[in-house]
Image 1 (spheres, rainbow over the protein chains, first blue to last red):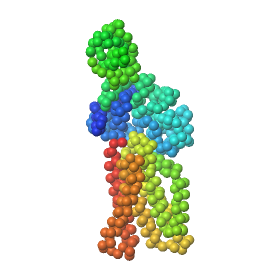
Image 2: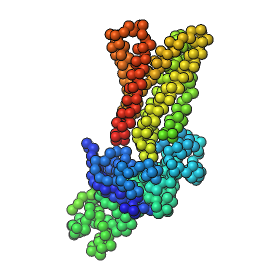
Image 3: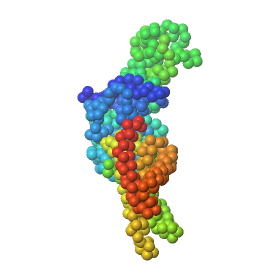
Image 4: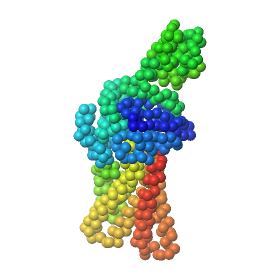
Length: 287
Length: 208
């Protein structure tokens, strides 16, 4: 418990056309956890339930060691939240937002906020509506980092941004977790971003957690066997996590590429990217 | 709470020039064409309605979702709108009254009865619609907020007519207009307080 900033256990939320079904994962202190999945998989529903924006049907959520009703203002002071798009009234400037937030967050760091604005080259007097999407996102992150947050929760924070802005933001995430008491939960369908910064990947598909693993395990252990029909038939069923037929090639996801290389020496086995793993889970079949 | 009110104040300050200009034009028009006392109601309604528009503005900018993650309860967030609505309504009545009294003194048409009746009317047509419009603004989508606004005035007109119809069985209305206004004012205050007490509880349980 003490080593996790966030623990989600058997989280369930039912809608008429969608069920978030017993989602469980944790965010260890000092780490970045990436929540991945296709659109509509349940990432935002999970985040909304964690933040108390929707009422869960069952399950427990523990933030900084506090559960459900215990998640009070003291805990909320330590959570920085960033949603996709603009989070703030468009007619306000960052300077006015400072006046608003210093009257809301008991831990608001005014000097830290203006220093961050300068560092991110965000004009303090300009209205939010005049900001580009990247600038708005940087502003949201500046606010999230200016009240001594210990946990950042970001929902699609990098989507729709150009590669330079995304890279800047990912650098900020990495800076934040340099302090080992800080943690980040970030949902994204841009898996390449998470490949750069995340320590753990939680993959949600159709409202269920398919896997929750360390990124290194996925990158260095998982592999894709690319083969023809005959070779595919020769692969033992227990070795196949999922497979997909593309034109004349079979792609087979395996969870231990080194042992697969030994077992099938004639097969071509490539390392799997998170994107490929996600695609094979979503579009692939099980033997 | 202070931060939330400040945020709404900043938003409304942006459109205050248009609001003041409208009040001046309408005020002068009313003073010349009809009764300057109506300015009390116009000012109260214009200012208090501006507080309701911040609710749909919050939805459009997603501030409603973001603010629910702040270290303030959703009950407090909704309550801040009721606070703002009342504060602006009072400000409107005071401003409207000052201008109306000044104009009527200059016209030599000042009378306390008109001041009281129009002040009551201002309270009625701001608080009664507000008690309907604020919860509906939370419960309906931002695009449908105008439905809430229309409905709130339909309810107000209905309530006023209903009370008048009921009282007409017991007293002569033409002779006791001030009493009628007083009763409907009291009813408006109660309706607003009831809405203030129930809406935050009702809306805070709603999924965002």
